[in-house]
Image (cartoon, rainbow, N blue to C red; front, side, top):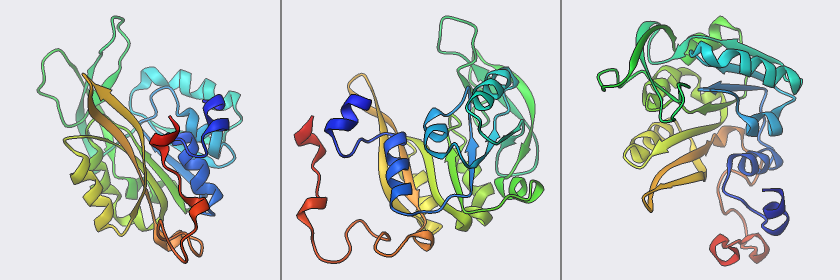
Amino acid sequence: MDDISRILPRIPGKRDSIAKFLAAGFPVETVIDVGVQYGTPELIDTLGDRRHILCEPIVEYHDSIRRTYTARGVDFLLDARAASDSDGTAQIALSTTSDASTITHARLNDTDAPGQTLRAVETVTLSTLVEDLNLTGPFLLKIDVDGAEEMILKGAAPILSQCSGVVMEAHVESFFARCQHLVDAGLSLFDIIDLCYYDNRLCQVDVFFINPAFAPDGAEKPISGAWDNSKWFDLIRHI
């Protein structure tokens, strides 16, 4: 990736996109990372000097998370509650796509599928989380939770206005519905990143939305002011 970044001025991945977001002048005081698994290296690399709130209900990941963030000197708080659209409890379905017994997926909204292990977890809305922990924005919110993203966005509705940016995974089937939640909250699309293909078809992406309320002058829209050819970059012509 480092070699590619020396050739291409723009790379459609989380690390480069967040770096460009920060370089444009968008403020971030606290990172809220929902669905951490073993850690989110792109957030550590670009925002390692901010406080990270790590929402990860799968306790099997916790030791690895603590080691990773401690080794990088990140100020973090690990919360074992599952982010959702209500405060309470729920069943989470655990499964694996690997040959080992390692948990690779955990779903709040798909508990009837075969071959899964159910586990009771405490749930919390992100608005409650922010209040409970007395968190200070602006927030960069990242969500990657294997299907419960829309539930989490509903629970985050009161605090989306405090997010300068939102990065969220979206499968092709859920892409428009998830984007609509953020558009309805007044956010604007900044980037589509981390494209993944399955059987030669687009399968999933991450969408990166920004809050125009936090945009520095001239950064509210993709094109503002007079046209500048030097700012135009056609990615496909360079790969």
